[in-house]
Every structure is written in C-alpha cells, then in structure tokens.
Length: 125
Image (cartoon, rainbow, N blue to C red; front, side, top):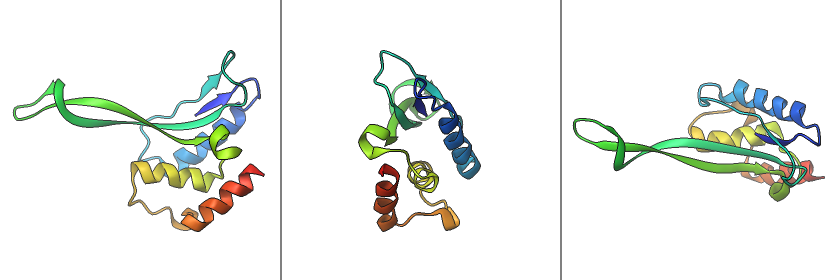
C-alpha cells in the first residue's frame, strides 16, 4: 500500500492493511506500507498486488524434469487518482481476493458486481 506521507495517510494505510490481513491472512505472504515522498505526486494512495508465478523458461530453479523461474507480476487493485477517493474495505478485500483466491468465500462481505459501482461512487463523493 503506497500512501502520501505529506497527507498524513499512514493511519489510513495501516487500517486497510489490518483489514486485508484479517480477511485474507492465509492468502497474503507479506504486506508493505510504502510512504510516497516528494518529488512524487502528492495525494497518492495505491494498492498493488505483486504475485510470483512459476513459468517454464530459462531458469533459476531446476528440477529433474522441468526448469522454472519465478516472475513477479504486479496488478494495481486501487489507485486514488484513477478510482477516485478511497475504497470501502469490503470492495478492496474482494478485488484482492479475486486475484489471489477467486474461490474463497468472503461471506457477508462479498460485494455484488452491481454494488461495486455503488460503493465506488459513494467513496468518491
């Protein structure tokens, strides 16, 4: 979670980190809070998921039958400049769950596709 340190959004970023870890603890290996400092654009709040997928390729790891390398992939799941405002925790949890463990049930916190637009517009207001 990258946040604007000049805007004093550390507490907000920590809150979202706590919500994500409480909901997706078994699916998240690590979570970082990254302060955005000048000369970066002020007002940053960006949540990015980086996963490491194994692909057959020239290799860092070799087994008896296959050669694989670990390739990091990054996906931005929320950007305040693009999505407008801050996400509601259930929406952020769902977007990250959809990437990491799509079959996982979030129970009452699951957001319907129709609700996704409602929540996004409410947060932007």
